[in-house]
Length: 354
Image 1 (tube, rainbow, N blue to C red):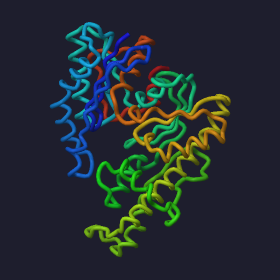
Image 2: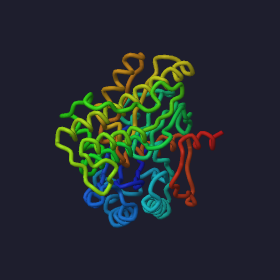
Image 3: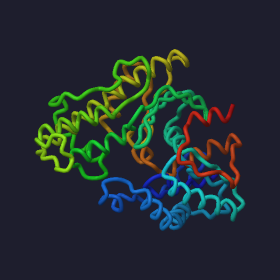
Image 4: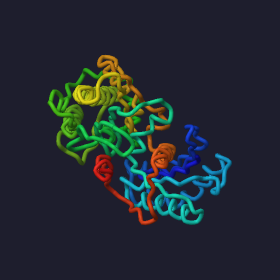
């Protein structure tokens, strides 16, 4: 079985070809970092235009590298949401055109399901497993019972963790892309110099909050720079101040994840038993500090910890193709009226299947 996957939900234009024995025949990703860097974040209109300009050549490169033609494909899978609606439309319409022109089944994939199943490309994982989904737009804990069957344990009540990383990097004057660069700068910092809060830590539920942590970082930064509450003036931080604040923020965020995941593991093991796996997915899953922290937690809780390769953590089309393969095997297809969705929760897939 050969599946073409297409991903355009944010600022990567991507296409990949996978087969059902988990071989990635191609995985082409075009980043838009240079286009968005002058603005310090992703500009939706620029992202959509870039997808439109590049989608055809990226798909061609993926097909050429896989050394196949469209007649050899079994289906085309594409991100249909959630994401920036302009970009999602570009990818979805391209996939529909390919499906129609070559008489191929269309599989409209939830982008979050791509992240949820991505670890299965490289690891042998049995359902059910506990999933921590951490990205620029999402922060959730879910029990994954099967393809399309997700039980929400907890989610952020304000900022997603990736968003908090990016906004905190901007506060500290760290260049875009903020989250990855903050992690690099934090390596030379002292995480204990500043006392930053751990929002929601100790609560009985599995929810998250990062807005207060971000605000506390801003206040600490302004206090050092003596520009308190004056947003019009740039913060005057030394390199060491910047590194210490970055390290303190990252440590606090990781402590929150550790605590929230600990609560989720307790519930998960009660409902599904021990000897299961915890999987981390999404762009923030590439953060090595967070990986090590959660690996320690799983060792303590007697759970297997699984994190996909870095290349499968950030947005990519291989995970979309794999989600397409999983759905193809279950006979789940979509027609050409499949809509583009700016919002689309994982748990809604479960509700729709009931």
